[in-house]
Length: 283
Image 1 (cartoon, rainbow, N blue to C red):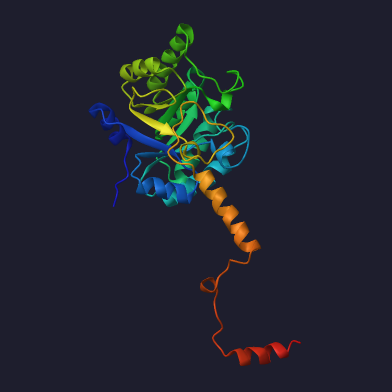
Image 2: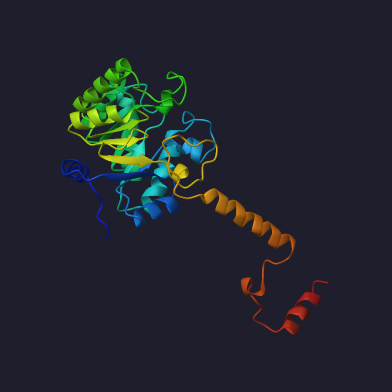
């Protein structure tokens, strides 16, 4: 049986130069596939808002949404390091509210860590959650929950001044107690510098290869999410096309009475004469 990694394993992987593979999953089947594929980590991301729920962004996702999906993922991947994503509104109000919601991920869904977005502005939240004994993952660069302030889903840190701010955020996040960091949509040169500068693992989603591992959204890599495809995505399959074609074939089979066939039905146990006699009682 696969043994679930801990934060110490992830730290050791960084020190050894071993890359960590990380994927999002939101339900039991996808989580079970990830565990069978030997993924190192699963993020139950608030990206479920777009990938699963059909929202235009992540803001509408609630704590109850996240907890429910985390529970399903844990059932599907009992032996994989899983991270619960704190949704918008779950930690912005106060340190106390942030800790209360972070605790829910561990108590109700058996997550190994939580992730929250932001740099210096959320340092007290990171510190409070970490002080409560919970492993925290920071997230800077393109932060979808605050994409409105960033002018949309745009790459970050592409000029010297904004890159400087991201480096300062990364250092502050580590100092506040985060145990690993996710960089989203920043230049690989910046990713490499931050990864080398920080003692904690630094992972990339659209931030290039020179770091400690990669995260990708399952709906993107499998071709299931059709609204848009970020530049940094590699599609490993086109599951949507397979599903749509299968459904079209099913529709045609039903219309042409090719389904169900005899092998798909359950036949009576008593004789047809006995059934006909019973039917006559109701005529």
